[in-house]
Each structure stands twice: as structure tokens, then as C-alpha cells.
Length: 194
Ligand code: IMP
Image 1 (cartoon, protein in one colour):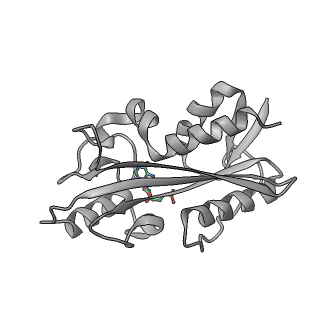
Image 2 (cartoon, rainbow, N blue to C red; image 1 turned 135 degrees about the vertical axis):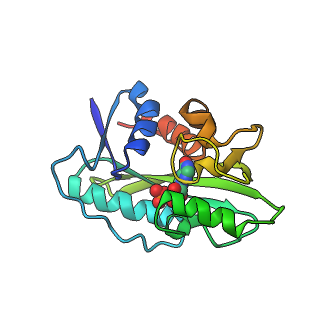
């Protein structure tokens, strides 16, 4: 079976990505599945694509495996430039990030937001890379709802739904999310990859 490394320690991301790619005959590994030590590179990019490439190239060059990495974030209409590529640095933990964002948005009626994802695939043999993008548009809830998913999921309501990603869970999220859309494009690319 062809092997693909995901440059992450996040088991949630492995599950999400394996569910999409398992069906086309790729064995998906994470940094926890390989015996090499891959220290986390500094994400010095100013775009999702730059950061995803930094992570994919770093892990790909150390492992010698075809490697993918994603970088993602939430963009809040009322807070331009504040989250985005810097979403994970907004506060220390998922819970603190959610609480801080809700507090910052208190009294704000403009609640539009979107998740954006960029997935980069990097081949250490050819040193070529390709990028795939996806986004999901919605709005921020007034309080956290639901315990499924991770990150900002409990306060993100995708357009066309009343519930948050935290309530909807992976059955729905995996069909409409930013990462699912980017992954769908990458899946098509991998189907023709030799
Ligand atoms: P990274 O791409 O793993 O660096 O994630 C960037 C930030 O965006 C983290 O704080 C995540 O919590 C948040 N994020 C990215 N994707 C999602 C998602 O699907 N749901 C909730 N939060 C997300």
C-alpha cells in the first residue's frame, strides 16, 4: 500500500484525513507512527500556504516520505487580520480561545466568520509541492454548544445549519468543512499520483 505521512501529532486530523484517503488505497501515517524524531518547525509564514509548506517540507525531508501538512484558521469578519493564520496563537488552549473570542465579540452583531484550510503535499524525491484550498462560511454563536470536534467548533455555525460544528459532529463536518473541501481536491490529485 502506498504510504502518506501527515505532518501532525493531532489524532483528530489523522482520523479526518484517513476517513477520506483510506478509500483510495493510501496508508496514512502521522508523526507518532514513524520511528524518527521530527521536531516541530517554527511556523514563520504569513499565509496558510507558507506555513503548510514549512511543515510538509520539514517532515518530508526528514522521513523521505510523501508528506502532507495543513494549516488552517478561522477568519472573523468583525476582527480583520486578528485570527486567520494566527488562530492558534489567539490564546493558550481551545477553551481559552473560545472564551476569549466570545468575550471580544460581546455585543457585536456582525458575527460572520469562516474557516479556511490549505493542504500542501510535498514529495521529498522530486522536491515538488502542490497546494489545495477549502473554506466553509458561517457565523459565530453567542455561547459554546456541543462537545464534538475541536478548536473553535463549539462556536461556529456553518451556513445552512442552526447547530454548531461542536453539535453537528464529523458526519456533517466531514462533508462541508474547509479541510474536507481541500482534502477532496487533494484526493482527486492522489488518485492519479504514481
Ligand atoms: P492549525 O492549522 O492546526 O495550526 O490550526 C489553527 C487554529 O485554527 C487552531 O487554533 C485550531 O483550533 C483552529 N482550527 C483549525 N481548523 C479547525 C476546525 O476544523 N475546527 C475548529 N477549529 C479549527
